[in-house]
Length: 224
Image 1 (tube, rainbow, N blue to C red):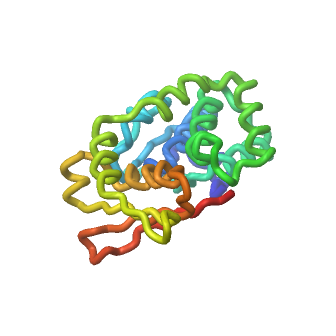
Image 2: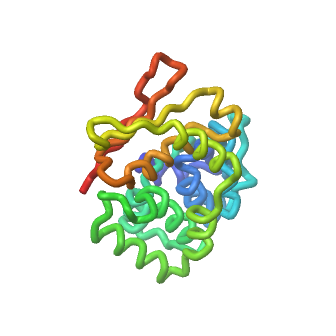
Image 3: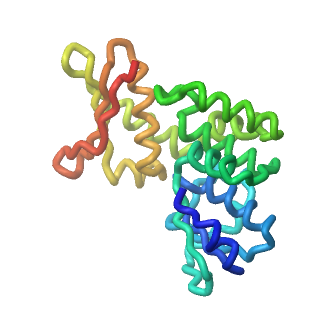
């Protein structure tokens, strides 16, 4: 992690810079810094997704740059690395921190279906639950709560899905017009790639920007 504990100790005001991919980790650090009686500001590079509204300090995030901070941290999206950092430095994890860490692990490892999941991941999750992480709340908000915009985009993209190479390659086409019509974001299209990969015989999914000369935005391949 790119956190200098010596600078944290010396600073009275710390700025955390985050976005949707790292907000859960930023919430962990925000809570930790408050336990040190530091003044903390939370700056977000983009509007935070409403699905994170259950997480502590969601309403503290601002797009305005705070120039008065004595130390600035660009928050990473690697939750496992953050957990390891806290453990290595013997930093106590309270319930708020444990809940945000659990949510971060849930996101990072795709609801624990990712090929990167190993014994260390599940050991970390077990420890967070032992620390009273509100794992049921995390699951409800992150896995079972979807905005209408996501469902609209899903309908548009899956309706245009094409199969190639005897059904082993699936292509999803997305455009700015579709995103505007649905109210969804590009990251929602990335999420739909996981669903397309579950189709029978599909080994690879390509997300293609149809209004940018069929530019391939991302390729997702079967990992097992």
